[in-house]
Image 1 (cartoon, rainbow, N blue to C red):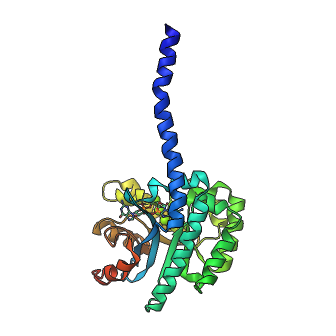
Image 2 (cartoon, rainbow, N blue to C red):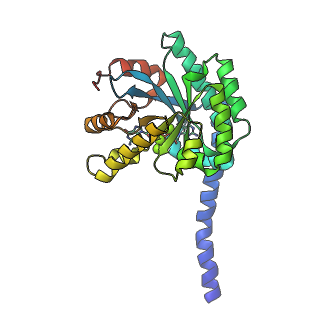
Image 3 (tube, rainbow, N blue to C red):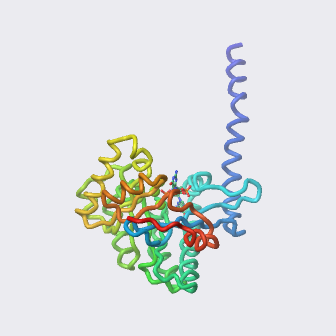
Length: 282
Ligand code: C2E
Ligand code: MG
Ligand code: MG
Ligand code: MG
């Protein structure tokens, strides 16, 4: 009887496992189709100079206009895309689309905005990356300094030799490099010093609790000082309050991003959103 019970228990879980596997398989098929059907879209979150409040550009953030489930955030599909390698063609689309948008904005008289694009770990490790970036810039006649690439600290530090090589090739093209989610990984200072990068982006985990957590305030100040020493610019993400904005400005962050200053919006709404933005004084 014990054997029967065991077998029964096993069978009990089987349909659930199958359902999960089926869902994953369906997701991957849907992602592939989404790319062909043009269901992905980039939203743009403005970035401002901390002092003076000038609009510097935007971070491009992918969304999936899912025919049944509505607008999906990257957390719902990027992990599966990364696992299956689909992030490579999706990432190529993102670069292409961001470059197309930069040129569209140039045509509308905005010739100084810098657009940041996120790269996943797999994309960063992919041999084709430098060629993909070069090709996208060339096809849309985008001056390289108008594009910034964001890689997370964890990705950058995973294989420091390889990272230095890829980042040197990318900075050689003239694009900017930002180390995203900084403070959540384990950077050796020696490695950080070697990394060809232009900017550290302080993870929003440190920004959210600034008012309540004095450790976070100390960490943020330390990151700014470290970045300064290494000749890097500092951007903070996740600025949700005016108090956070003024603290980050006072400790010396160069630029700021966050819901307090502007949410990610489709490109069509970007210009109007920032036009109605109340100027902030630094
Ligand atoms: P990330 O690069 O760190 O992007 C910042 C995330 O924080 C975005 O979430 C943004 O909407 C959100 N955010 C911005 N300001 C605030 C704020 O004030 N408060 C809070 N709570 N959140 C804020 P999103 O768009 O859901 O993107 C999540 C992550 O997905 C990104 O983190 C990035 O790692 C990844 N991702 C987004 N677009 C792409 C892409 O095109 N390619 C790749 N490979 N990854 C992407
Ligand atoms: Mg980012
Ligand atoms: Mg980030
Ligand atoms: Mg983050």
